[in-house]
Length: 301
Ligand code: HMG
Ligand code: MG
Image 1 (cartoon, rainbow, N blue to C red):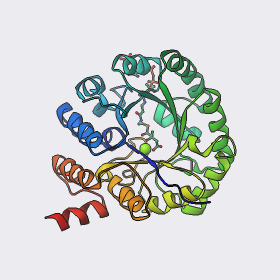
Image 2 (cartoon, rainbow, N blue to C red; image 1 turned 90 degrees about the vertical axis):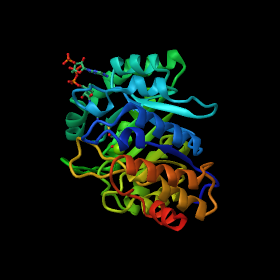
Image 3 (cartoon, rainbow, N blue to C red; image 1 turned 60 degrees about the horizontal axis):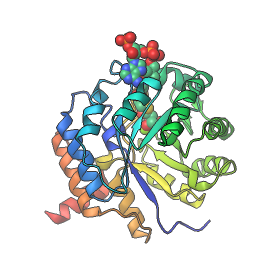
């Protein structure tokens, strides 16, 4: 399949990137990160997570983050909402999109959200209905779409089952997530081909963690299967607290470098993105985990 002319990048550093940080990050730093990313031209920023603060203490200040960020015409700010409590908080905080997150593996579903896949869908039903009634965009995320850290490889048909249920809930967009970054391009292509038989390819995104260094190749494979929405995290920040050893999402700087190098539009100012990656890495006291970002920053200095 021909490669797309343009792609949508969903920036997940403020949520997926920071949720695993052990030391609490100041709310002001989180707000500045979101603002800088939006200023760089990112049209969809995952800005907060309305989950239990006992489970993920780092995300406890979601309301303050959403209240503090600068809203911009044309930029969507999304928030994770595992249940009605999370949805109500996200609605009050004026999230533009809410994200229900399930899994294609029973063990991960239990570890991450403390219920089975079937129970999670039942929990999402009222959230989906409330989102539709409130006119808010609904996204569904499917973890362990390639492999599960507990259950091993995931069959694409199992991913398709969860996709069907998320489509029934009325999801506008569905994330196919490689939570532990073990997927390789041909498997990615296979799962994307399987799910795009169920809905238009524009419904699906690739959310690839880069633990095994496969994410850029996986993005390329997904594009060949018609996918044109990708999640990435500036400076490669991140990891899931319920997937031990899983590192961050693919670095946004690397993805934008890839796209621009192939003449694919992103609407993002790579220079500003690189500066943001270097800035947040300095705030966290470490080197940015982006090859392109660090190379471009070195050239500038
Ligand atoms: P539970 O313990 O089964 O549910 O948690 P509960 O209803 O019994 O609630 C337990 C306590 O949490 C109660 O407080 C609730 O009030 C409170 P207590 O009475 O003990 O004081 N609570 C909440 N507080 C604030 N906001 C809420 C909320 N809900 C309950 N929304 C629950 C179930 C889903 C809440 C829990 O398991 C949870 O919060 N899990 C979050 C896990 C998480 O955030 N994981 C990381 C994000 S997913 C991810 O990273 C994967 C992704 O990137 C894709 C990929 O890479 O795979 C998206
Ligand atoms: Mg993730």
